Length: 235
Ligand SMILES: *Cc1c(COP(=O)(O)O)cnc(C)c1O
Image (cartoon, rainbow, N blue to C red; front, side, top):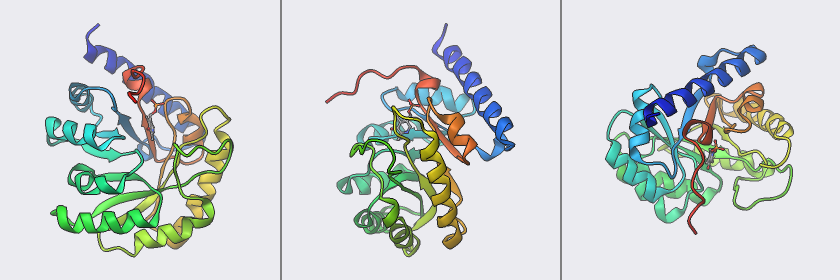
């Protein structure tokens, strides 16, 4: 089977899962954006996905993402879903359309300055990542503590260059994702009360997209189910 046929088959299965989950939740599938997470996979896979109609692409490392963005060119929206390092923001804002994991105030001012300096449109969509505080603490997962969420959301909203679009979270990987997504939905509702435009909820991956959609996810970030298993991360 060609790579294109393989991805097309996997994509059809993912679309089916999203449609079924929306059906069960009484939601319109048009409310859910599929972000294809292409980390570790080549730019040629991004092109195949775009060709198959998936134009929202997620990456988690700046070096890999900026190279792929340059190779792929126009026609896709780049979602940076990884932890953001402050020394990478200048590079990041040159290609990213959405940054999903803003989780500290120091990052907000750095991103805002970089947007003013590097972007012609002077604006960047961002999501605040929350640490759902359920299951084992995991520093790799990142995220602001729920108690500090209000302050961080306000900091983003106060900038000229960053548009607060909503919240993002990664559910604990080896625990029931349900309580985490319920908590996220509550925090998202609280955030929306103060920031009415912050309507996005980025939650759900290959293993837990149904639960995320049940609790209001507007963006699911799917890698493995679309592209197959990733090679072990290089250390
Ligand atoms: C890799 C990654 C995903 C995709 O995970 P899969 O389990 O492969 O679908 C989603 N979100 C983030 C933040 C990731 O780093």
